[in-house]
Amino acid sequence: MAKSNVTYSCSACGASFSKWSGRCDACGEWNTISEDTGLSAGPSSKGLGAQRGKTVALTDLSTEEAPPPRTESKVAELDRVLGGGLVPASAILVGGDPGIGKSTLLLQAAARFARKGLKTIYVSGEEASAQVRMRAQRLGLADAPVQLAADTNLRNILTTLEAEAPGLAIIDSIQTMWLDTVDSAPGSVSQVRSAAHELTTFAKRKGISVILVGHVTKEGQIAGPRVVEHMVDTVLYFEGERGHQFRILRAVKNRFGPADEIGVFEMTGKGLAEVTNPSALFLSERGEPSPGSVVFAGIEGTRPVLCEMQALVAPSPHSQARRTVVGWDGGRLAMILAVLEARCGIPFAGLDVYLNVAGGMKISEPAADLAVAAALLSAREDAALPADTVVFGEISLSGALRPAPQTENRLKEAQKLGFSSAIAPKGGKAQGAPGMTLKRFSELTGFVGDVFGAG
Ligand code: TYD
Ligand code: MG
Image (cartoon, rainbow, N blue to C red; front, side, top):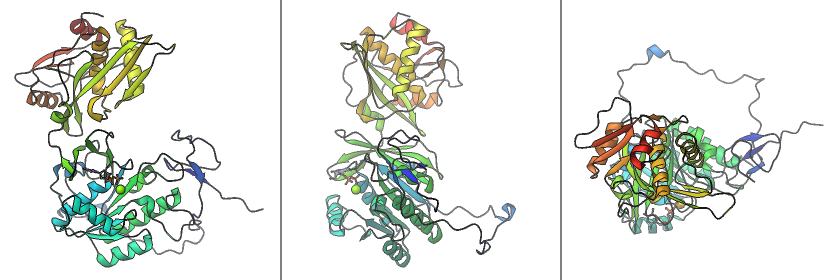
């Protein structure tokens, strides 16, 4: 009997398995594993009859040659996330939840790039060209020199791109594209993977930049953008909370610039508007100083961003107290609570703890530890921190405070927004900013004793 070659892969993360199971071992998602169908057998290694390629000695490559110029959209928030503009022949993935604003963002970007003289084609697999045009009209971009195409057959799209030879092609979305050589439904892992592979290799060969839109999916039938992350040069995620008016474009991977860079946009009736001073926006809803609210001076990529950490601590009616986090890591919260208990003798047992990063911002920096600890203590003790104070610093398991990078930038941003004092770890080489009072501690116990008179 012939050996079966059936493989299974996860539509959320793309991991392959030889057996089906209900839960993906790689990413932990449920019901995302399905059979791979239609993948043609790879080239046989027996017949090495292919053409010989060329190699170039590293030393032969001239360094005088300037890198190809990037095209700037002049939307500073977008250019920064791309690492300083669009690199020719690069492949970019823009992922995000359905309805978050990806199509709007990219149509606006297409108009910008087209007006800068870069020939731009916007291929929609979800909307007819007339619908895209209506959207453009709503955004005030009806006169932008963008070419539109509505198609899902990748063969046709590649032929169109070959003939038109644009500088930038936007594919909205990669999950709607299908190849006739792959024998499975559009949106399946093998279709999405093959389509992305065709598009990125085509782009490199022809010197066209491509932007692929990928919906983050919750159900198992449609492959998510993570499946193609490794094929592209740059991975951007467009995030934000429904009900909040602003959106964050975050570089998760970038071969041509720093990762972790963010661009902040505000949703308006006329599309996305740049937010050049995000700290002011994130703090705009802050009222009088209240217990549980602490301003964290953070760094996102190369830019300082202030935001408010809110904590609520209340006696728990349940046998197992609740720990709920929005915008931060739940594991990290558990760690801070454990350190407060073990090193400072402040128990949270029997208390429900809620932590929220205001405004829908997501924070992953360890330097937020001290701000979180301060918010938790402030909520627990029902004592507000002075309104003019920002907090930052990493907490280690021993209860020691570790200096955070870019202390000076954080302080300068805080000062710019009217704060006059900061609580930070000792150490590091930063001097502080003139006009800012700096309180520095080397241990969490020292901070707790000084600021809350306990510990
Ligand atoms: P859309 O760009 O279609 O989201 P996605 O492509 O990620 O699925 O945007 C969703 C809806 O939000 C759409 O009806 C337009 C609306 N919207 C605005 O009104 N203003 C904005 O600034 C944005 C980004 C979206
Ligand atoms: Mg869309």
